[in-house]
Structure formats: C-alpha cells, structure tokens
Image 1 (cartoon, rainbow, N blue to C red):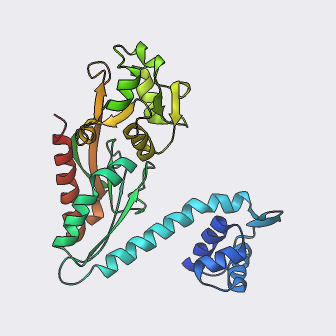
Image 2: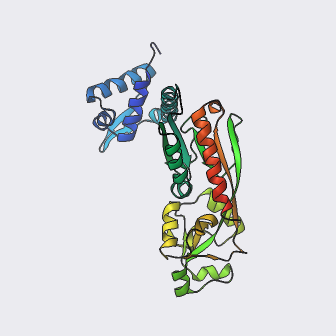
Image 3: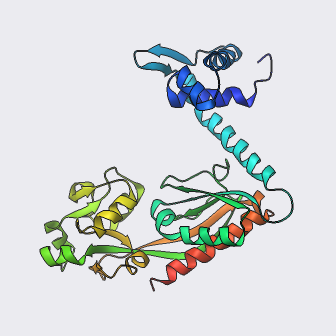
Length: 298
C-alpha cells in the first residue's frame, strides 16, 4: 500500500457491510454519502480489489470485503477499549466497563449487582451485553465476561465461581393440567420447551439425555430468556437454573433425581486489565454476585 489508511476508513467499511448501502452507512456514521463513497474507493485503490458490487437490493460485499470484516471488527473493539481506558484515567473510580453474560445471567442475575455498583461508584458506567455468543476478551470486545466454560487463553485472568445447576421445571398450573412425569420416557407425553437451532449445549445435553433434542420440543426459541418466560407462563417443561426457580414458588422441579446438568461458572477478564481499579472492582462484584446466586441452589 502506498500510504497509511486511517481507522475511519475501516469503520466506514463496517458500516457499509452492516447497512448494505452508502446512504445507510452515511446515516449510521453521521457522514455525507460522498465521504462514505470516497472511503470505500480509497480502500479499493489501496488493496487493488473490489469490495462491493451493486445488486438489486443494494451493495453486495465481495469475498475480499467479507474476509476483512473480522479484522475491522477487531479494530473497532480495540478502539472502543482504548476510549474506555482513556476516559477512566484520573482520580476516583470512573469510566466505563463493558461486561458480557449469557442472556439469563445478564437479565435475571447481574442487574442488582450493577445497580449496587452504580450506588457505590456514581461515576462508573457499565455496558452490559446479554448474549449467548462468546465475546472475545483478547480482541477487547468486552472487558469482563461471565462464562459457563473455562477460558483457554493464557492472557486471560479467570476465577471459577462454582457450579450453576440446571434442572427441569414447569409451572404448577401446567402440571395440574397435564400431570407430572415420573420417568424420562414420560417426558414424551408432555409439551417440552427448548432450542430451535442446534447448539453445543443441546449436543452436550443429548449425550446424557437422548430425548432432549429439537424434534421433541413443542415450543422452540433460541433465546434462553424466552424459554424461561414460556416455562413461567405454563407452556410446558423446560430447563431452568435451580437458583432462579427457587425465587418462584409456582415453579416445580420435575424429575430432580434423573435430570441434573451442572455448568461451571467463570468470571474472566483480559490480563492487561488487572491493574485497572474500575475493572477490578467490577470483576470482584461479579464474582460475589455469581457466588451468592449459586449458593441459592445447594
């Protein structure tokens, strides 16, 4: 390449990939459409490659553009992490910490701890990403992650909190209408709640419980929160964290001796953040929050 290409050009590339048009990317970024076009043209000239072709529904990314996407996303995450770190410097605990957790943990468990952090540290901002996708700590997509699998990368700092126990649960009204199964085979006569798409969790569960597969589910959703809502609404029998079910006296555990699924729980962050007071405070708060949650389900 004959000259340096600024980060803003790659940010523009991401916007066009996301929006599918120059005009959409311009609105997203607060730029003019000609500026967006110039950025894409500059990238194409520098790489000697076409990044987009025109199709009936808008701009179509070429294989080159798609191959660049992951690298551009990593640059965006690093730039965001840089800003979080820069704005956190100075006296006191302030700045932004970005956390990811599974949908259920993010919605049902950690909000109270986050509210406590805000009370204790009013200048601290927290970004919560409730997602079942594993956010990349090495690429600094997030600062802290709550995971149900042990981290593999040596650059990460991790603390094992304990084991989240999963079981089968149904609303008392559902069981009053349909009865309570007495064996795993008896589940076949019931409305089961589960995932729509195949997931690593389903594959792991099926090795121990062969009937727990997609075709057995009468109600399907890839959202854990939606599944929990359907259990609470009396839609059928589904998997729920034992600690969460203990909060609701209307939820009844089904086959407690036959269906037990433990998940190790870890709080992790990038090793570079160990010296960050704001990240350490949030890390410790997440560990305490998860430990208290797990203790609800002895």
